[in-house]
Length: 400
Image (cartoon, rainbow, N blue to C red; front, side, top):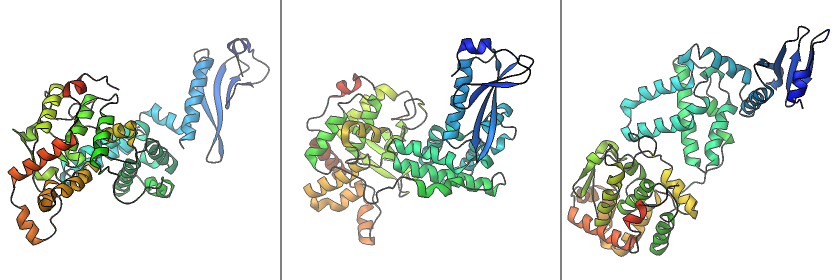
């Protein structure tokens, strides 16, 4: 390897020569005395060269950093020469960049999607895809590039998210093909290389004592107070996690949460009577987020919903990975309350906003039964948080 002293002392000769460093990096010394940093590498079976600039304008340490960046791109399946040209040209045909095509695809889909689903898709792409390959033109994106993005998501144990992101990327590439800016779908090619996903029901703790302990364990770890309060509210209401994450303050009407049809999976409005503990949770989180439109916003952007993985990651960090997921509170509520109140099975199904099974049950469920549902929610809250952490402790907890 070269040293700064050696680089300074390199003198011109009768013909050009190389002074090698490491990792393919070398200094080309010309007969005129100019010194140019270059890197030799192979891509697609062909030998190629990169130029990093002349010495001393580009120091030895600068050249090594440029070499390391290029080697990282190679590991991710990208040709560093190509990406350098793209950055230098600032995407002369910017409409072919993945992010530009993806945003056009999002705009085309938005009229047919709920706001919650649109926000989920847009947020996943903005956080997980655009920073890595969003600036690369679609025709230059290879399957290894896409696989690198998806595997980074898998490493965080978010296998479902990885699959959803791959599907969304595949739809964007197909949109690019249809609009004439692409010719292949590299996201489709990689399906067989993804980590296997176990089929079946999502993990859920349905034993009351174990569930209480799980909540206590999660609320005892360092985490953002809004995330902890979101989990508590989710557990108390047993709605779908996405309905909590995108919940606006405008839907809270006194001690009732009124969810409009467009935010519900079954496209029917849903009313959730709030227990005393749920109201206390909202009062606590209002101190933190009450000035914004959302009850449980993203930690970085107050106008965006909380990340779809925030609560799940927190549960995993508390040691419950593979044992309980945010959606599991619905199974817990159903199992425990059906056992305690078996004669109110249809009311409990109504509280979970399940699809109607037959005409008789459909007629039964059209009634709101708010008083009975309020009573069941209060029973659930009382047994679930029998030894609950006080709100003051959550609000003053050290953040992660």
